Image (cartoon, rainbow, N blue to C red; front, side, top):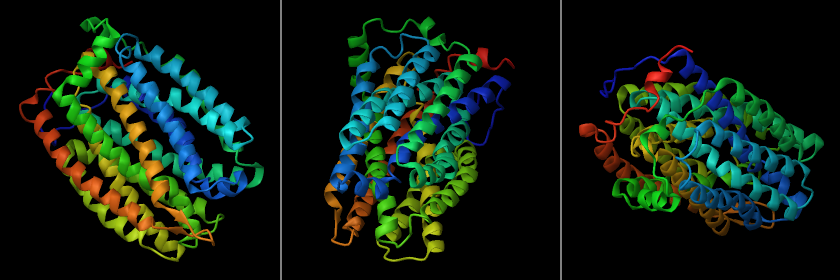
Amino acid sequence: MSTVPGSLSAFSTYQKRVVALLAFLQFSVILDFMTLSPLGALLMPRLHIGPAQFGLLVSSYAFAAGISGLLTAGFADRFDRKKLLLFFYSGFLLGTLLCGLARSYASLMFARTITGVFAGVIGAIVFAIITDLFAYEQRGRVMGVVQTAFSASSVAGIPVGLYLSNHWGWNAPFLLIAAICAIVGTWIVVAIRPIDAHLRLRPDRSPLHHLVHTVSKPRYLLGFATTVLLSTGGFILQPYASAFSVYNLGISLAQLPLVYMVTGVISMVTGPLIGRMADALGKFRVFFIGCVITIATVIIYTNLGTTPLLWVIVVNSVLYVGVFSRMISSSALLSAIPTATDRGSYMSISSAIQQVSGGLAAMVGGMIVSESATGTLLHFDRVGYVLVCTTLITLLMMHFIRDVVEPGGAALAVPAVSQVEVNLDG
């Protein structure tokens, strides 16, 4: 297939089905993760904890996910990816159910850790599947659809979660997510074929050797380093956004679902368009545009005081467009780094690094931000400046990655391993 920006190849029927399923699966996983942050304004007084303890609660999930990803990396390319996905998704369902049954800070911390252990590998498996089944010039559009799971969780999940929390307690959203997971798990069993073509490429049979091999390749190290900073920027700001909206911007708890809903609708509309632009115009070009938008809106957002609801929605919506432009384009570009026999391992390590970096960032954010006597968050603007710095650095690093994977096509010379199979209209 051509790798020239602008040539958009069509998807087969089976590919379309896979994209829809992976998007819904990501919706359930991301909804579980994102549900906790908007509940911060509700959870902190209910559990009698402060921003630092809440940051630790968010980080426990991330650290557990990171450790799990590293431990799985050596084995990730030795199994049918469908079976691996079902195993970890079942564990994720169990952890989410435990969150719904938790009644204290300690029990919730335990449940979030269990959830993180299994959730940390799911994203890696999903991206390995995408890289296996879709050619490079299709991945922007795939990422654009799959990443709309973030938007969908904002539109449908978070407002519903906040509503359930306000009426039936903060546990209720997690019970709803567990029910959704049961439906998605059944769908995976029925709709997805075995994904094992990579096993015919003679993967490394020694888990330790495979892990060492993956973490020692210079091209992979550049991808891992970029992932660290991409994750740091997102996690350092997002966990405290709901509390900032309520206590600093003057948005009521009743209005908060509307902010997430409108922002999510806009992101759902723009996400697939951004993915299409990434394939048509070039992934780095779209990433650059996303960085510019993100930097400008983060500086504005983190320095706001009491603000009318409409302006809060506008700023949040523009910020999400910038963030999604970076997420979708960077995911597609980074997917070209690993070869077919290393994809599972690379994605697992990358996911682990992402989670650990995000956990550290959430903790750092909790140490930077403090609470006044009235509940207002202090020094939130400093968190924004950290995000601006990481965005500028990742822009430079993604420029180098673009030069590695696009000219000459060293990484692109390895086609999606199941391309012949999935081009059949199933």
